[in-house]
Length: 356
Image (cartoon, rainbow, N blue to C red; front, side, top):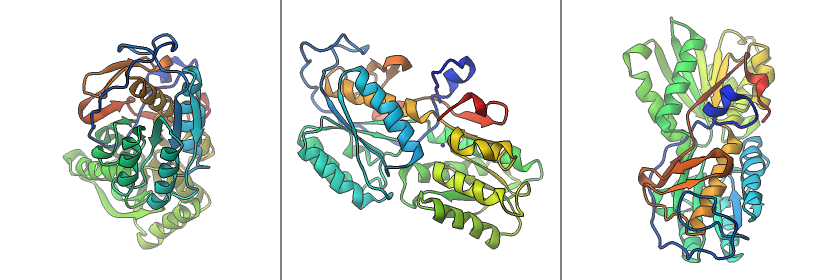
C-alpha cells in the first residue's frame, strides 16, 4: 500500500515506492524496430512504436487503487507515446474471472497486456497463450509465476514493504508491544503472501520481540467483508493492540470500523492505503501513519515498460535500460523485475500534500 511528480519536492523522490514480491522473466526475440515512430523514449536502441494497443487488467475494476494506477497513470503514459489505452477486468477479485478477459484481449490482437494477478498460477495458461499469439505480458502490483510473463513492475521490494509495515505498527503500538493481527486481501494474492512472510521474518528480529502476531484474516479486497473481518478480529482477540492491513480496501474498511467503535485510540492500525481514502481517519487520529507507493506512477511505469518491450527497445534481459517518460531511467533487474522505488509514509503532517 512512491515517487510523486506534482511539485512537492520532498515527496517526489520518495513516493515512487512500495511494493511486491516477484521473480522471473522469459526472454523472447525482440520485435523489429519500428520505422516512422516517435523520437526515442528509451535509453535503449530504436524508437517507441506508435499505435500499440495496451490493455490494463487489474485485480478488479471500480477499485480506487486501480483507478489511480490505470486511468491516472497507465492511460497518461500510453497517450504520451501515442498508443491505444484500455482497461478491462472483473468487478470482483477472482482468478477465474481474469482468464476470460485475457482470452478476449488476445483474440483482439492486444500488443501489451498489463495484469495484476489474483493468483500467481491460475491465469498462467491464458497468459502464455496470449504470449504465443504475440502479446507482451507485463505484471504489476501482484506477480504471476515468472514463466507466465515477460516483466514484472514491482512497486517496492517485499522486504521494504514488510520492514515498513512492522516499523509503523511498532511505533503506533508503543514500546510495550502486544498482540497484532494482519487483515489481508485474498488468500492467494501473490504480493500479500510475500509481504506477510517477510513481516514474520521482521517480527522474529530481537527489536520486534514484544510484538506477537496472533492472527491473519482475509477480506478478499471487498469493503464489507474487510469491515466484518476487522470487527471479528477484535471480538476474537480482546487484547489486540494493532492491525496491519497491507491492502487499500482492507485498511480503509478497518479504519472505518475502528473510528466508530470503542476501540478507537486503543487498537492501532496501519497498512497500505491511498491519501484520499485515509485522510479523514488520519485527521481524527484513528490512524497515526500508513504507507504506499504512488499507484499512478506504478501504472505509468508499467505502460512505458510494455511499450518499450513491444517496440523492441528492450528485450527484458537483466541490465536493459529504458526511460519511462517523466519518471526517468530504469534498469531491468534480476528475474525480469523493474523496481519502482521505496516506501513513503503518510501522516497528519503531510497527507494534504497529496491527492490520489
